[in-house]
Image 1: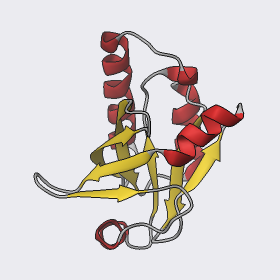
Image 2: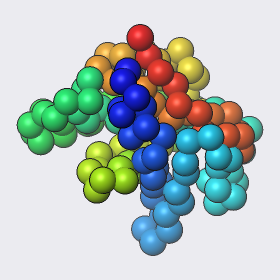
Image 3: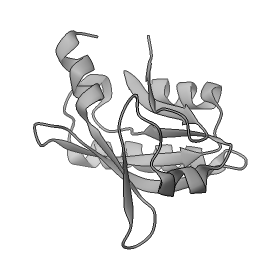
Length: 135
């Protein structure tokens, strides 16, 4: 991954919809906001999307179909809660995303790879949000 793309991942604001009016924002290398930490508890979590695989634009209909497939796959994992989310880049781009609580790293890696993602953000409990790079 080139430096510009890596910086784009690191500078993105990762917004999670907690309920119909409340949002929390996480950032790479910072701990979860208190509102999310309370929801996550001691579980692993991830901020993940199926949009724009390999960081290349794709038709909206194809992105939407892939996102629905990712949502279904996450919901099928045992003991996993999924919240709507959106990543917003510093240059104004955005990608609908999902915040998954309870999914293990092996399942997340498999799903991210199957949707052509280069990386996703993850963590454990209230710890720091980490950028997980995939080969």
